[in-house]
Amino acid sequence: MIKLPSLRARKLNSVYFKNTLLLGVCIGIISGVGAIFFHELLDVCMKFMLETTAEYDIPGCGLKWTLPPPPGRPWLIPVITTLGGLVTGLIVFSFAPETKGHGTDAAIASFHKYAGRVRGRVPLIKMIASAITIGSGGSAGREGPMAQISAGFGSMVASFLHLGTRYRRLATAIGIGAGIGTIFKAPLGGALFSAEVLYHDDYEVEALIPAFIASIVGYSIFGSYSGWDHIFSIPPTTFHHPPELLCYAVLGVACALVGIVYVRTFYYAEELFEKIRIPNHLKPAIGGLLIGILGLSFPQVLEMGYGWIVGLMYNKFPILALNGSWLFPRTWEEGVVWLFLIALLKILATAVTIGSGGSGGVFAPGLVIGALVGNAVGNLFVNILPSLVLNKEEFIASSTLIGMMALFGGISKAPIATLIMVSEMTGSYEIIPPAMLAIAISYMLTGKNAIYSEQVPNRAYSPAHIREYNVDVLERIYVRDVMNTEVPALSPDMTVSEALRIMMSSRMRGLPVVRDEKVIGMLAFEDVMHISPESRRQIKVKEVMSKKVIKVTPNETLASALRKLIQHNVAQLPVVDPEDPMKLIGIICRSDILKAHDILMSQLDPDAEY
Image 1 (cartoon, rainbow, N blue to C red):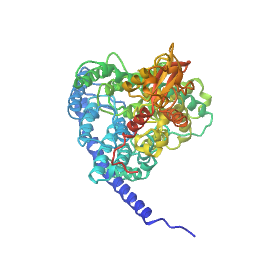
Image 2 (image 1 turned 45 degrees about the vertical axis):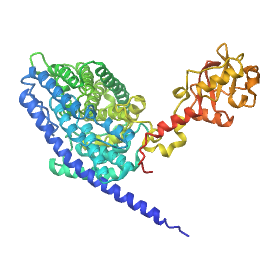
Image 3 (image 1 turned 180 degrees about the vertical axis):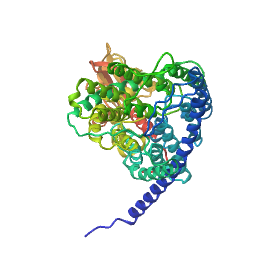
Image 4 (image 1 turned 45 degrees about the horizontal axis):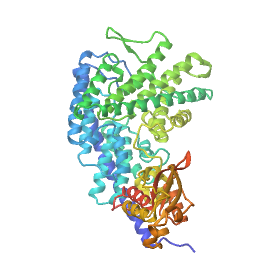
């Protein structure tokens, strides 16, 4: 006999269906409209600041790619980038400091730490600040801002509809994917990104289906306005020659190494700017000045750099000569050196732009850096091992494209989303098999080096799911994190009366007995409560203490400590040095464990729905 779902179960499923459908549609509409406004505002800023003022025609992403003329007024570039940083700093730190940086991290932090709450002013401030940062030449992308903008709108929608913490968090995740999928015209990749980017090695599966809805709604609105062409118009990219897999495997290694440099440089710059003792409002101006100085000689590191990616696909990447004209490398060896140099300079430019407090994403710079590395490695194989390559032109284009995927797929910890997203952005699906190899190698070699610092390992580490994993809570906290190192130890030769006074003053029901810094016993309140007051002044601690000492080390988890407390029915445990099991270094009580547990659990909102 088939058992039908209960009325309550059917009702819950119906509510979930209606809420997620409503969130998906609403967030998709807002993402599509928001992408249009952001796209236009960014376009206006770039045309006014770089193209009109500095006379720098930014290369386009169209099919008929042409090399733009060099900047006509290069001396104005540092002025524009500095002023852009100054205005950004004033806006960001005056109205919404959380809009500094690349946006995606802030959206991830909102999901994990802040119950999906985003202040209502954040989307507007992020849109304006990012348009000024990128439009003035800052090395940043538009995907991070759109992730935070859409996540903010999603949070507002959930709060307006009174859907509770669970759905507000879900709305934040949906917004991340919808924003990126819309602005990149990559709805499938964006939806996958929303589920993948929150963790290093897990997925927010509940966000996937509503993110599909939101991404396709946003994509349809934005595409109806801006057209249905791919973001990049590139030459043919194919894979029909298995020996080329060796080249792509090497490319995966190269992208992992450069990706690690990207991540560490980025966070080093962020820490460095944090230490500078000047008002935060002024720090983006310093970053702007530095990027402007770089842009004098290397304008390729300015703004997003999408046009230069298309140039790399056609194997055309010039260098600015001393006389102000473009110059192409004379040999392929010289070209490879320049490509790696520009990649490192793009890393530096992105680090100072965003690390100083500027507003913009890290995805676009990551794609440019990956394209530079891919083109360099492609040229190496074409010239050193030409027998491995079937078609040189197509191989150069393919390695450039796969470099984009491998580098950012490795450091974003969102390899599948990056693979699909870049394929949608370029319309190149034929190179997915070799791209999978390069991305897998890059992902494994980058290890814990992730560009999104707010990611957590998996769902068990997120406060959003902590009630689902409450058995594991104490497995993630160590004794060293909560133990008390100021231990009022007892001497074996003191009287029981003296020991009781120390217990009362320390408010502990049991204390270790120590001789020459060695734990030789434990004295509990229960051990002496039956002794008469008169006898307590005569009897020594060593006569009544328990010589069987149950100990823990600082490296044990609280779960292990709690098991020992329960198994041996004691209220506290001495903590000993792992190198010297008799040396006392602290004590841990049941109350310490309970307090640590409650602090971690309190990260959940009281109105959370599970």
